[in-house]
Structures are given as C-alpha cells and as structure tokens.
Image 1 (cartoon, one colour):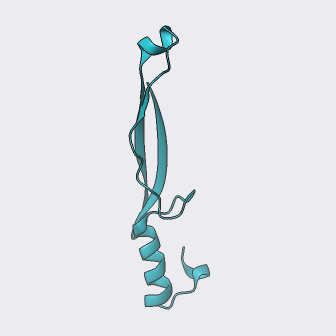
Image 2 (cartoon, rainbow, N blue to C red):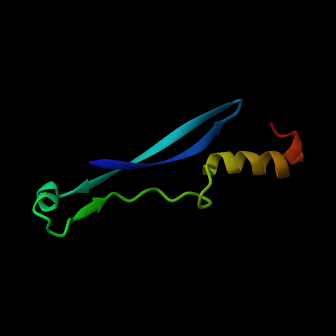
Length: 78
C-alpha cells in the first residue's frame, strides 16, 4: 500500500499551520503476484483552490480581507 499526500497552508491570525491531506492507494497484491491486470483503487483528493498551490481558502480570504477590506498593500502583509 502506498499513499499520495497534498499539503496546504491554513492561516490563523498570527499563526500558520500546515494541513496534510493523505490519500491511500490500494492495489491487489495477488493480482500483482500472478501477473494479472492489477486493480488500483485511489481515494479522491480534495481539490486545491489553485492547482499546484499551497494556499487554502482561509489564507486567501485573509489576504483579500487585508488587501481590500483594510487597504493594506501586499508588501505590508507579513
């Protein structure tokens, strides 16, 4: 059995946490030993907001609120 993992960042004001999504990959070991077509079952992974991005919906909402709600320039957001 193997796994595929995707990570995203979640922001809590003054705190950033890494949230890991683990997806299990199952295969028929008997089929592999007998060289039969292997059935592989993979659980669906939650879709990211932007493909290839670590950003979670909460961190994007925080950035947009700071930028447009508070009028804070991006270079001042740390």
